[in-house]
Image 1 (tube, rainbow, N blue to C red):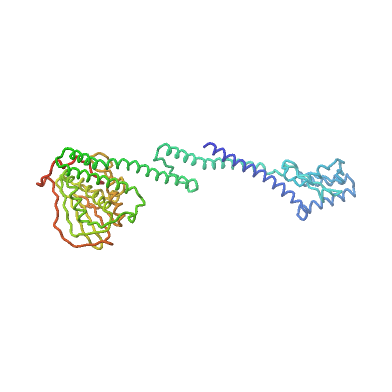
Image 2: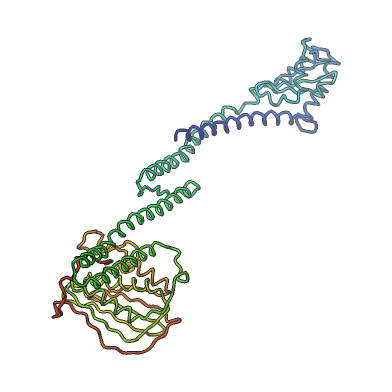
Length: 468
């Protein structure tokens, strides 16, 4: 970054030198113009020419010399000559070089030579020559150099002002490039450099978020696949050892289908341009879907020592993507099961009102801090950031749920039920058919409440996808 300092200083010095040269040229030009005919100094010079002519005609060289000395007493910094055909009438010296200098059109550029003015002109037979020494032109040069010194200091500060933030920005970019994703400039400048720094900070934050999300997604996918892979492995072992090969094969096929659905759902949450119109929609009965989920999750509930309670009212059918809707409700239900204390219940309520169908899942667990209620639907967010098997899932389940519900133009939210957490889903009833049919509650109980459960059916499960 030293080159920035050098370039800024060289540019500043170049500007200063150019300004000095311009100052001298302008000073000489203005001096020449001040002797032009019609100006006060020009009229005074013409009068001096006439008076010198009269002195020479009346008194000869001696009288002319006295007149010129008298003029010098008024203008001690100037030199005066009276010539005839280029010859000095007082001393007889050749003044032709001075007349040639007065004729030159570029004499104003010769800043180190004197200014020569000839009246009435340099080509006349008789001419009154006024010589202005260069030191008179540069009378204010000392002050100008003092000003140059002050400007030089300011230019150095200006170079520092531009080079330092660029140096900081370059260092931050290098740190970010070698893997320090937290590197930021945090510039408070309000100029173009500040805009560039803030643009970099925004880009770096976005890149960090994307890279972190990508790494977390890989971890979450591997973690999310453990449960279905464990069930699939167990089902394959049953297919090998169970006397009922057909039932075991059906169980394997079911686990394969669930694993396929899970992978599709995990990919779905990464698609930012998802559109429900591009999916295959078909009529879906919500009560059937919920009851099927309760049956599928019965083993998990038994393993956790809790029981599932269905509290439904209406037979609600809607046009939807059954895979997405199934996964959305399943994630909520498995999340509740994981956080339900042993001996407690997980309540699943289905209903319809005000043109909307609703599914509500409540557990009696510890709940979620109020400030985290809106965060649990973000991908990879978990109240407990640890990743051990005892702390729950990886923070992807409710994000998948929200994505699926949003694609169906519905909404999902969570609230503390004190005790426990209540997660509610609402889906619009546009193009839905609702048929009232009050049904008795369906209770799926664990072995703690007297039901007999085949120990072989209790799989060696990894924690399901949970988010609080």
